[in-house]
View 1 (cartoon, helix red, strand yellow):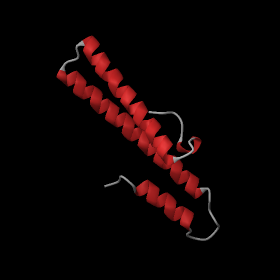
View 2: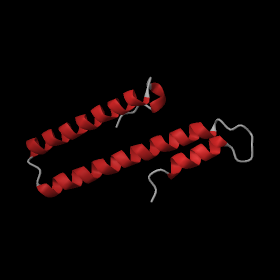
View 3: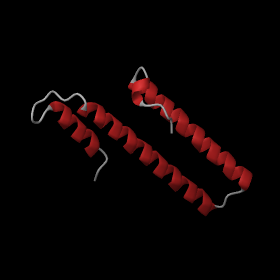
View 4: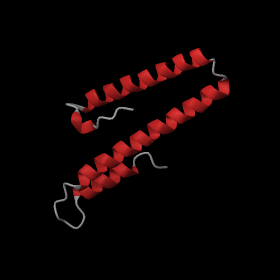
Length: 95
């Protein structure tokens, strides 16, 4: 995944386009590696699972970074919009 954070891009769309390009690069690299090393089906599945875990970890880290940005905008009220925003961001993706 990209090492740049959302805040370093002009728009959210630009950030997402870069993430898609990065994922496509990793996927193509994996396909090339499988061809070069003649990976069997189980090795391929294991590598895909590893990549899914890496993506999930990156998404969670980005979500937490966004929640922390919300928390930094605290307006001093006992329960403010910034805290509600941070909680909503952290709740995304949880079952």
